[in-house]
Image (cartoon, rainbow, N blue to C red; front, side, top):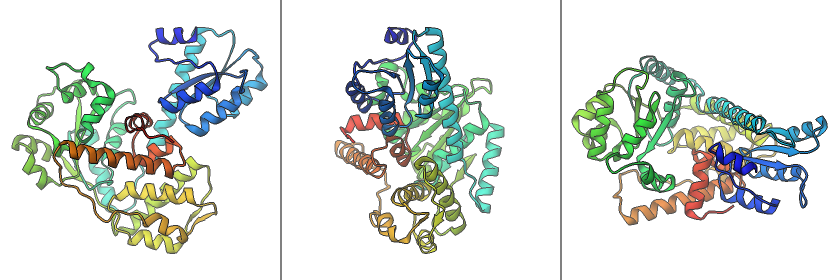
Length: 416
């Protein structure tokens, strides 16, 4: 009955007749919400709720029971349930609670996202950067963002969107490096016609919001022509799409691969993000913030780093910049049970660093695709191991959303 109601409302719904089957569904699919009975024959709802929250804390759970008493409701909420509903269930009340739970989650994620991604680092160079971005927000300018890996290109785009748009306005991301696998995972073939390219389709989805095109150096000639049209032929109305293009290549390298008219348009408003290496003030600021973030998601109370470890952080080359520092602090917090992060764990933090990475564009042949798939699979397995199987944390470490992680795990047959 519940499944029938939900499908009519446009939800994708699955049913499980016992906890074992339910756990299997949760392991295999990116479930967003679970409606679980409190009274069940094999395992009670509270035990199942506890397992769900340990497996993936982002899954919402609404508990159902025929015993509509306050004590049970309080117990369910304390155990981590999003809400509670008494049987017999009224459809209008159920849908209201579902909408409310998703909206509360969205507000919490937005708050956490802003807290995590929009930290204002110390130092004049970041102050100048933020002043420039605020001007881009005020004037709704298209923008080219360049910078080394991990310098915060995605966070910059999130800053523009969150500061310049209502939360209902879309932020659509096209990652050209993930084009083929994303196309397969999202079944874009069924959504786009032969006459409509991926870029145009995503541009339409972004109507009234922001379109972020990542890895601009991979744009082919047709896409470059389409992008040029987006930058020059739009009306400044409610459907205006602010286009942000990002790349790990510097402007000189981009000038060699982009058609002159497109490069000229992009170069008008551009920003290069600073690297982390050698900036003690910024390293200290980010490390302190990411430690607070780690304490929050791990439920710990680590107060700081030993001075000897901070010196190693200052002297490290940071080839992956801010993202690498975030991952390193998360790992350090996971390995720490005392009140301070000890220098003794430095070999665990720095020992497996790859001394060099290939950053030149590679041909899109089968060998490159295989190498890329192996690299992604390896990184996913490392993140899951680091996060002790917690998919929410693993997604944060990889800087992707939870559903993308599930899809990639399914694609590469990765299990926890």
